[in-house]
Length: 111
Image (cartoon, rainbow, N blue to C red):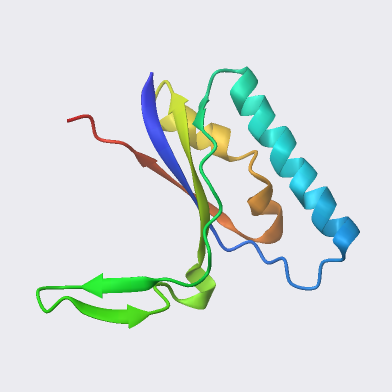
């Protein structure tokens, strides 16, 4: 098994009622539980705050707001899968996709 990082981007939640937000969270919990039960979830990861800093280049310039608003990274998870194809297929169950978000699937390089 290899390790992969899921980076969750976007996923519009604007205008959701508390009940709708609860339904979204239940979908996330169910999806994560399914991954865990099948031995694919190594670390649930965490949601990320929208604020942050970006340190850039040799000058080490620092800017506020590390990402373009439309490309906001909302969180991450660490997954175990046979290969990139399986990790990608597993990501297709992510609830963020229902809200026009995306899951970036990145292999973790073994050093």
